[in-house]
Length: 198
Image 1: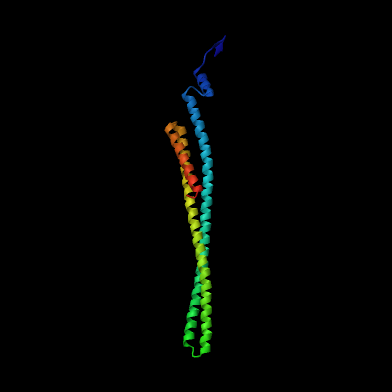
Image 2: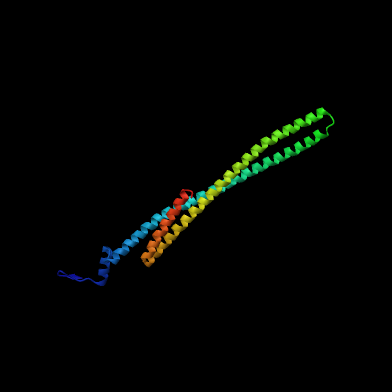
């Protein structure tokens, strides 16, 4: 209320003035803390979203790689079954050769034995190759799952940091703000480990 150069502040006017100017000492510090936490939360939420996406991508890759391993194992199993059928035929040809009364029959069965032995060698090479490919796919799947767990750990720690930020804002406790920064930094470190496949 002012009149003739004389100005009197009411309690409400005084609070409004302090709020618009940032207040005295502690009020300005609270405003700085709020801004700092808000900025930190926005950055950490963005980083957390990226980590969450990477975690989902690595989990999907792990599933695809495991599926590829299963396909290769099935193909290898088919080859080993084929190998076994050739072994059975070879055994029957050896038995027929040993029981054949004529030398020309023995030679005919020996040719079959030799052919089955050669075919078994070729089948074994294919089966071994397929098993090796299955092992590689399994190892890649395991590596992707390990990386997925790292991304999930990083995302979880960042979510804890965001929760600490909310509690720090509500309680205005400085130690919670420090804990928020520590958790956020820890989450970023774990995310870096995930990016480096460690």
